[in-house]
Length: 353
Ligand SMILES: Cc1cc2nc3c(=O)[nH]c(=O)nc-3n(C[C@H](O)[C@H](O)[C@H](O)COP(=O)(O)OP(=O)(O)OC[C@H]3O[C@@H](n4cnc5c(N)ncnc54)[C@H](O)[C@@H]3O)c2cc1C
Image 1 (cartoon, rainbow, N blue to C red):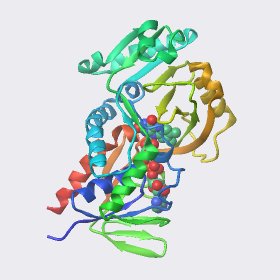
Image 2 (cartoon, rainbow, N blue to C red):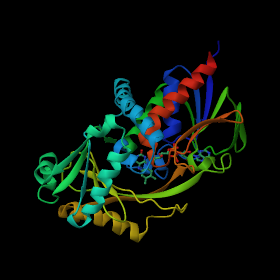
Image 3 (cartoon, rainbow, N blue to C red):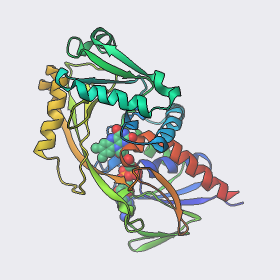
Image 4 (cartoon, rainbow, N blue to C red):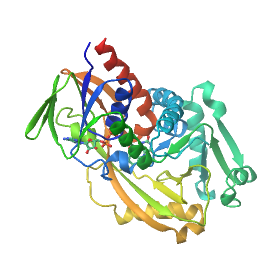
């Protein structure tokens, strides 16, 4: 039997991870993207890449939670596989998340805590621990004396999305994937990828263009998100910290080299323009209120991108008119991709037998 040739439109998180898994399984893969692989303007390159199955349950549902649970098992395995194959290193931590609120916002923390207990399946409720001031200080000495009550969410994690995207590109090259950069895909049909000025025959076509898939899936919309990245040698955090606030919830995710990603705004807008002053103030104020030493942090990046979302805010894998789609990852792309991609890869490999 000949090798299955899969054509994937879109080399974001969904397209790259699928390409990598299929190449590892022995498929031929052609990957098409209208941007260069290092382009930073996509959702995948902009995300904070928090892996928060528990905290995100407050704003999602049991379908996302189930995908997240499965993905939290797969991420460590995927990281091991990337490392064993000699890919460039990827920062990945699974040391839980701390949730705190300033005294004036305590009601927001209480509400969040009750919501979690209400929505969490009983088997997972023991992953939530209530902390007092000394308990918080023990986990995060940098926050000692600043907060008097908080929650620890066991098992949550985060990774450096930029490093992951580099590692995946490296592996796609190593495994012989054929990468068409600067190649805009106009449309896909069952066995054809239609690009500007060229058509490529494939055995299976997969559409992973994020918001760019809207011509083929009109229900998709973009939800704007903005993040701030700073460098601050004066503060050390071991794990992401979520700050509860009556108007918004923001988080601070530590990265290697004393860098911190602060995110994320969520705006019902498809504006892809630069980050606004209002958002810069919100993100910066949240960071500064966590620890005054952040006042001296150096701003490295302010970035905005569109999260691809469907109306139910659930990620979707679907076969439509002979073309496979993986889309609607919304604010849970990093959280849910391993389970989604693993499932889709098995489906596609099944078609080859
Ligand atoms: C600010 C922000 C913070 C986030 N934080 C988190 C988080 O903490 N945790 C989490 O789990 N998720 C988070 N997300 C969500 C996550 O980033 C997305 O769900 C995920 O990256 C979507 O990946 P994707 O591959 O579907 O889409 P994209 O990253 O948008 O990739 C789509 C690719 O398709 C290409 N493309 C588009 N149109 C065409 C075309 N016509 N032809 C060829 N190529 C095309 C694009 O160039 C792009 O490379 C965040 C997102 C944002 C914006």
